[in-house]
Length: 460
Image 1: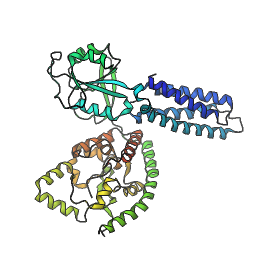
Image 2: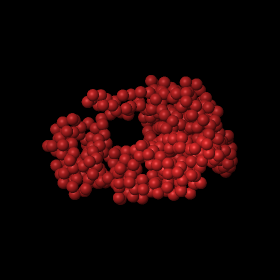
Image 3: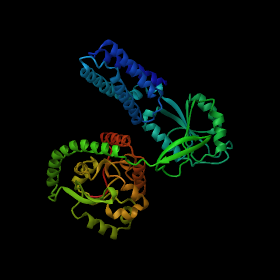
Image 4: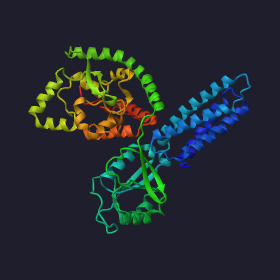
């Protein structure tokens, strides 16, 4: 177990024992259940800290507690007259302890950050290193506290130069001093962020630091995003990446549809007061046109459907866009490339507020309830974008479009059209029910952190 694993284990074991002690269950059964709880937690590997994301930790928690509940049913004395009472109390314990464990795992990384963090050193000083540093800085769950960077350019130790220097907010040291830096800064994790580094240089570098730190990780070279499900295998000494397409099976399709129905009902209930607010707000700003906007979009298997949303643009937005593209070359080029305008003059005052608060998409819960859309999926593309989608079109129409999805949670506000296609294709080829849950959690996190334009699209 890691240091953080020991801390979480002690806290969770204490809490679980207290909770179990107050339940009206036979003493012998309580002891068996606590032993089972211990077995399931260690079996899942939760205290080894292999999960680098909170969602990965959630997956381990849910799997361990589901296994605990199922196996615990075998420990119940079926001849007792309180069979269903015992099942109910075990179910209560499972749910309550799961929620408490989620809370502990969410905050333990913050509470005990200084005691359990890794002092990390990034080898590299280019764009990849910058991106890795930004992830470490914002993802506290990984426990990486980056102390600085190693510049590998213009150093006789390496056979080649690898990356251009970029401005960093942390120190940049020379590779010749790496041993002394590891000692002085008490480095216990080295992250190699030079994907193009050759095998010879990698072996020489590894030989210098292997005995100084226990945790060495590197980013492999990947030309573009891996747009398929992948698994790393040891093929008799050769590193082989196997691929497969995570197509949605009948069971997952049914569970996904059930999740859509359950999730769309509260969304539609919110529509009632929200619609009243939007109507009043529009009238106060002199806008008397219909508050809803209906537009055809490409659905599953290429079937067109009518998508609903609050109107956030002026009524003749399409005609205005056409005129703008004819008269302004910069606007024409921007829209042709990204299928949206960063500073769109067609957006109304009320529409700007709706988009900033991610409220303009709420009517799409109606589409989700009807079955035209899903809570999670590719963005709903316009029929006119069919030609620009190329071969990725077949991936896009392989599943229902969603209110949120990969590009909304993993992309940026200035993401290009091609990058959106890649992210949506990734979703189709890597689909799992857990991926949907992960994307929904990221959506909620982004909404509550007040980030703008999470689920907003470029159209009306």
